Amino acid sequence: METPKTVLLGKTLNEIQHITQNLGMPKFAAKQIVSWLYEKKVVSIDEMTNLSLKHREMLKGSYEIGASAPVEAMRSVDGTVKYLFRTPTGNFVEAVYIPDEDRATLCVSSQVGCKMNCKFCMTGKQGFTANLTANQILNQIYSIPERDTLTNLVFMGMGEPFDNLDEVLKVLEILTSDYGYHWSPKRITVSSVGLKKGLERFLNESDCHLAISMHTPFPSQRKELMPAERAFSITEIVDILRNYDFSKQRRLSFEYIVFKDVNDSLVYAKEIVKLLRGIDCRINLIRFHAIPNVNLEGTDMETMVAFRDYLTQHGVFATIRASRGEDIFAACGMLSTAKQQKEKGVTL
Ligand SMILES: C[S@@+](CC[C@H](N)C(=O)[O-])C[C@H]1O[C@@H](n2cnc3c(N)ncnc32)[C@H](O)[C@@H]1O
Ligand code: SF4
Image (cartoon, rainbow, N blue to C red; front, side, top):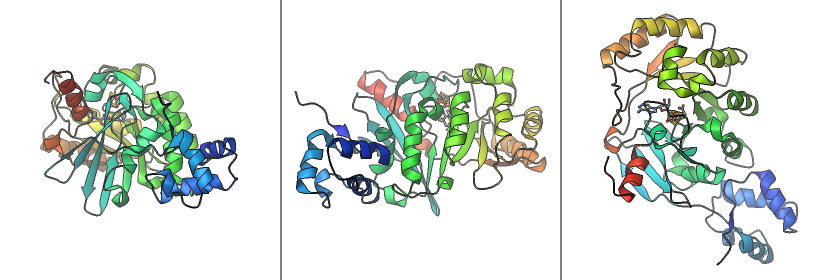
């Protein structure tokens, strides 16, 4: 059997330098290769025409680009497209393309499934299967037809990015460095429940925006909704965030799914104001995408507007996030779970 080749897409400049060094290629070859990968976005090593034929052949002996097209695309009436990618081990991950006036955002996944088991999340219900490699994360951007129109990227698909931070940081480096995509870190937001080590490392090693999934300001209730609260509480998260400056380039936001009769009254809004006092941030109120077998319901728009207005009037700028792609199961984890179940012959 032929040995599988190592993929180049998703490797940092440093990693490519190791490869070229090991193959005895000249020092400048690494820069040439990353330029073919990340600027010219080639699909084969043969296209790297400023490498000598001999070096291209050497590279092809053990390496390949490693781009793979989505296996399925579902288009919503509102223009949102959900892409499904198959990993080499036969798992499915989702990326959602969301066009909106002059913006085009891609929501990417960082893991197959998730360990965090949040009560309201379909990906959490899947359990954890695997971390995605930098290649598999970057491929979600590289291999969609709209890739050159993207203005923003959010890590709000399947998985907990801080639980796979080595790979996520490599992707952020490639997207924001001069040798890579040259993107400003302001175009990228990483969303997390807040894991202590990951949070501190991300804050120190990246300049990208941060979104923390709060969902309730009360630790006792957050434990019920989000088991990760037990390991690292929302109050400790906020304490750490107080030490960082979010008043300049980097933005901090909190996500808050508004559940009917659970976290949608003024008691919650008042506690949020207290918790976030003195921190430069905003809060995004999210409509709940109902998932099967979970006794939670989204609140009505009138309550959401009142909640938003209270927060904004009391110094915490709040917005209501538009819910997109409802007709194509755009809530994270819905499509991949459906696909997985279909392959096993189960219906949801
Ligand atoms: C899927 S998570 C991925 C990133 C990270 N694991 C996190 O929780 O922040 C992205 C956002 O989607 C939210 N989310 C999960 N399930 C949802 C649902 N059924 N309806 C609406 N939002 C949901 C999460 O709370 C989180 O704010
Ligand atoms: S909301 Fe985020 S952390 Fe929670 S289970 Fe879903 S993906 Fe994991």
